[in-house]
Length: 363
Image 1 (cartoon, rainbow, N blue to C red):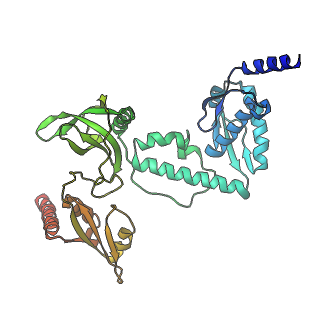
Image 2: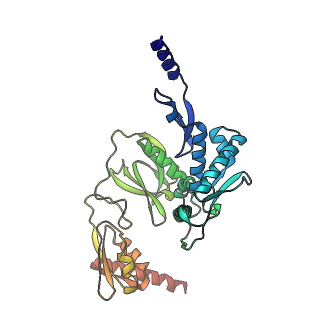
Image 3: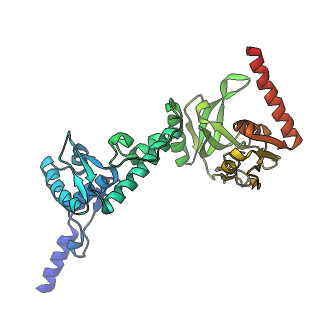
């Protein structure tokens, strides 16, 4: 009889249905199925809810009650019961959880100890994320919204800030975010992207069919790096210049790897030709007041930079179009000067004369 009873118990255990629990990382739905092991190893639904509540409060500093109720499909009474237990646990760790105000629970800190360190670290990260979202605009801001929490930086900091950032905010670019979303969806499906793009002799633009590889954020704009089927070469396209939202244009059977001569992390020299395109080494002299700032940054992967004993310096940048380095040099005013090669120096003089002529014409 004993073996029969054991088999019966095992059979009933196998029939226990899947029980939905929370995915702690993203508050999404997950499932846990009881196997033949000890059932005590599986956390209860109540334990998972309390853990999720504590994690969210420590990460974001706040939790809307309605969001919790919808995620876990529990009553307000259950939420308050879970909250009571979590409040007691948080208090031992140095945190204070507020009563429910306007449907939201917040977490503050007591002075000193680990709680202060955790809270300060969280707020520092949130500040950096918020700054990044403001500077880069969409589509970065759209993606960071969930990471930063529903309230973002306006949720009310729990600690004072000493370090602040002052950068121009990129605004009015929802079209870029929509274009990016479409491109990312097409890229994830290994498909060609089809869109209309401007051409100097055709005001309405021409249709492009490309193999999308990556999007690069550079100097406040977003560029698609892609292989053009018509031109049979790699090109870049500014997302804000696209005249139509990209559409999928068929499956890519074998995606092309990015050529070695294209470096997506170069902030100078991204203008793409082909493997045979000549890259010119342009030398820029730097005055002491900007030299250290310039040479301490990597503008491209194969730059050459030196600092002199008097505090001045020089940097060599390799580009297929010398105009790019000339314009970059002008950004430092009289503290930087193009000195080589002769063709780059001549081009810098020509551009300066054109700018001066424009001011004379205004007068």
